[in-house]
Image 1 (tube, rainbow, N blue to C red):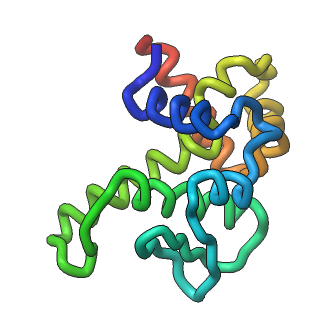
Image 2: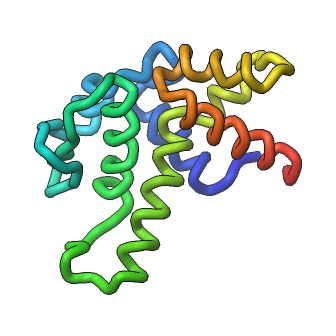
Amino acid sequence: MYTHLEDYIHELYKSIGIANPEDLNMLHIAKKLDVEITYSNRAFRFDNEIVIRRGTKSEEWLMFGHELCHYLRHSGNQLKMGKLFVDLQEWQADNFMYHFCIPSFMLRRMNLPDNERDAVWLLQEVYGVTAEFAQKRLQQYMQNLIYR
């Protein structure tokens, strides 16, 4: 039993043949979704182009997840939107990023260590994310298990 967003991401990955953590490759996913990735001094989405800042592989993966949400689920020009609507879209994109970069359907299949520090390290290694990101995603996941 997943949330609407978790189901959406699972179906998205299934539709492009992504089933396991080792399949999570930004360039491969972009190609499958017909998205072009370019680099600039700030991250944004324009049409089917996702522009991200140069960074570590982990940082770029997280930016890609955030901007991909704007591409897949949002429309309109944020420069012409009210602040509250922009804030909502940014919150949605951040939430999407956490579930996209470490999908619940993959996380559920993992045998996570009981020790939080070890579990965070494992998520960081398996999904190519930062320690802070892995810790927050683990907390989200564990909290959601309580309410299911």
